[in-house]
Image (cartoon, each protein chain N blue to C red):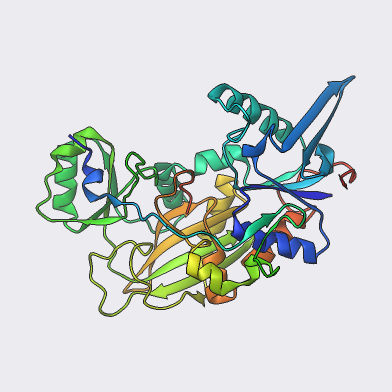
Length: 63
Length: 327
């Protein structure tokens, strides 16, 4: 028998998107292909939901 | 003096703070403990009554004594990306890294001991009660009969994980969910179950606390929202987050909460009811803030950067002279 709480579980949403930025160890920041700093591109961040409070993280449960 | 940020490379929310620190000319070293022994190195010696330590990452070398603060943001599992990872190596690496960092005079956001304690939701609820925050009636139990009796006293309930964690095999999410009035509580016996009186909310509140600074944001519930849409993380966003003033009693309670919990940062979730009461739901000691800043324009990243860069504020244990170097 599964615990009561798991009656309310749903499949985790698997984000099947690749972030369009890469980490630059020199800058210690993520950078877009055109050289802009990813954190300044709010449109991209919103589209990816990377700064959002999300449930289901594998490694962190502080959202 | 250097700010040390422990987080993953893909953490763009941390980038927002790194940018502010750079603008302020504050040295930053960012590393992911997961890269220990594979890109990240450490050394510490304890000789003749003195201890000296260094961290190295990406060509940067920083002295432990040159750290002004440590921001534990989204660190990976120590040595998880080592050439030959193992549970033993993880424990060795965690003990070495965090043990050395604990011996520095750096201030923490948040200290690992405080963070570990603060993750316990039952403890959060108790502390929130103690500091005068409104807490919805809650039951955590493995007794089916206790759940049934609670449901009779509070017929409109929600259920959510006690830990906030989500099952991974297979990957599933467990949103805060409304419990049907005729629910069968017999399976409560198979796992601790957190039942809470549902707050008929007119808005969600996210209050981000950074040191003494409280920045609150409010998202009204859509007029046509279904009462079963309890969890704001899973409901479609009806409108953006907007800044809101913190009621004085809530501000006092949150400040006391942070003091008692020994937290420098906390992201508090409240549900605002029809009477304007903010009901405490939880405090995420490392909660996200980027989405709030982007919607509201509130300077959360800048406030975190100021706290990390600050000296002589409450909670700061003085560090030695700046000996950090970048190469």
